[in-house]
Length: 428
Image (cartoon, rainbow, N blue to C red; front, side, top):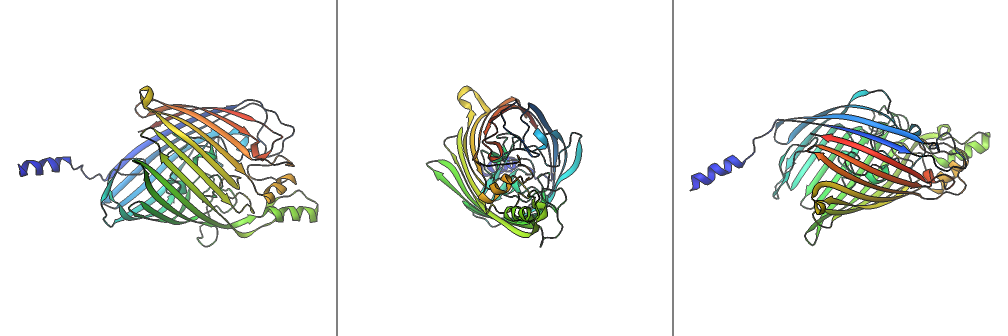
């Protein structure tokens, strides 16, 4: 009998995989009809009807020479045409849209990194195979070191219900912290070093990553003591009844050659020119924080909430033109109507800017995303998003998405904007 059990156990042990390969492709089509606008500017969302799209294809290739050491490279091809050249909103409507996007296909290496894991026991947990992740067990207490080129959002702000625009919410304000100046180039990737320590239900993540040479640019600064972003995240897992929940605190600080809103306005008053942060850029810091909550209600329903805020004194350098943001929502699996792999999502976001930021925009200043020529009565940008994601067959999903945006770029003289989207996503 003992021999039989031993043989059964041996058969149940999965063979060690040295290689992993998977692919994804996502197409997003969007349309916003004509909307009301009393005026517009160089960085406004066009009030005329627009149609936009994005298309991406990524291969996730991994090599594991031995347990604990993993190498990944991800070649990627993207193309697209966003609304108004990706201008006119704090919370952009398509998480797949890039600042360095093009209507022609562009191929590049999106990620090239190594991940080293040191296990310290405390029991094990099973990890399913996923993009850039091998299947297998890992210690509950472990140190994970990631170095190379990756996305900061691959590691930080991993909210289960609102994080990946390829499968759930599309709006930038719902997929991540709206006011987080995440270290990223114009495609959303960075280079850096991140340490993660997991201890039972706790996790701590600390990383230093590069920012672009120029505001919202494509080329990263190669000097880790100049244009950089430091991020610290503390995570606590817990159970409410028998349902899992997680709360996260993120602290961030960026240092780069940035222009301050007040300095730009003062410069314009002295020299009689339009306010422009490009005239007053100096090496300075921009810091902030984010708090994230996710809670499973049952096996099919999960809720989430985020609040984030930065100091609101300098230009949007590497993410969105948002100084504070509150978002929350719910996702529901389709088990109740015999479609367990379908998902319904409902989310709301409220984005705001600082008084110095509003004064700059009212003086005619342009940010990377916002600038209607004036902003005499700023209001919160209000975003509602609803989607239904249907599994057409294994590995293929179609999503219908609707967004309504009041006060685009904080301007009550424009909008509301209705956005209709169709997303097709394949992953194998």
